[in-house]
Length: 216
Image (cartoon, rainbow, N blue to C red):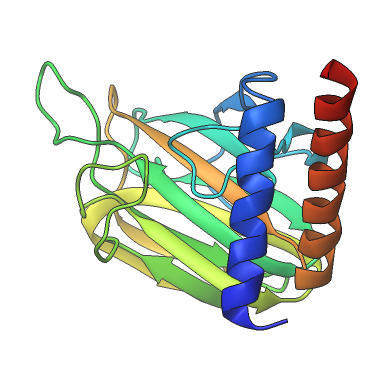
């Protein structure tokens, strides 16, 4: 299947889902739990937290299983936030939504993000997304990172304050910690293998058509 045909198939599956299964439930939202200031203390995100429910601010939310994390800043000179999750492989999207700058009345934070594999190898990092902005952002200052072709395994993500974060192998991180009172929303999406997406799309189309015929 060509990339164009695959994209059209994915869009068709998404449209069928929106037509026949509108707003099933809200997406999974997890509250950050401190202390999670190092890789050793990373907050675990269980596989059961990921959902494929429609969420307007998440890219391809009905196609890619996703979870959202409500993160906060905190006191201390090492307040970097770490999260850990596992995936069956293929791809990962990390997406920060803030939509603003830090002010007394709008305490969001300009972030940087990084991700390591289970051995501590740094495999990606991002400060600012490239145009166009994703569905949940109004500013390119929000972090966005997509990695494809990853093996199954456990991955660790870190969030710190832009612009002077430095990441390194061995889960290394330095720079400006997340100050107390600020907030951010981190979306983690898991991209399945293309064959799994085709099966998912076919299943959604079949279920949607069957439900539609029953109503006639």
